[in-house]
Length: 208
Image 1: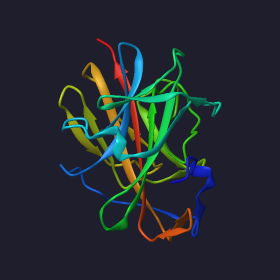
Image 2 (image 1 turned 60 degrees about the vertical axis):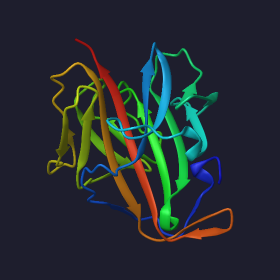
Image 3 (image 1 turned 90 degrees about the vertical axis):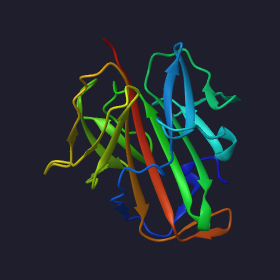
Image 4 (image 1 turned 120 degrees about the horizontal axis):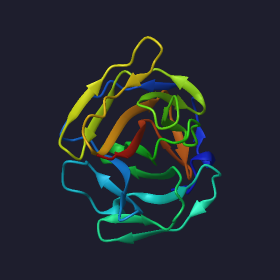
């Protein structure tokens, strides 16, 4: 699998936002900080985590797109950085029935610019209103799934301008997730995939 999303050839540029309901079978990659060290996990926030070896070519970077070292430690992908900035990590996986999944994770909400192909972005630094961007253009999500480390979860429906606003009444980790499907096929390393999905997560901590 290619190590960079930019090297993937898209047979169609359109993106369809999938109306996927919050379910026990949802899978994604998310970032969080443990003792100030960024760590990425595979699976679900409230369920058993999967082995990080189940995803291919994980790549972590900051807004300047310079790569950060990534290593495996138990059930986590550890990102080697001490910088206090928003962090991105991308990876991919071919699931059952040949579905190609691209996972695009971000930790932090201080930056209002998207770097990943599919990214939830705050409309103002450290704000609670977010918009979804695909390759730099605003798109309308059918829904945004929210879960917290406190066990609170919601499904948010975007307003007319495509934004969602999230109340942050509980301290802890907040995770926003949205899934989109490419209209058309994608060819990677000479193999064609007809079912291609992008899943973006945005995580941030809310203090007491």
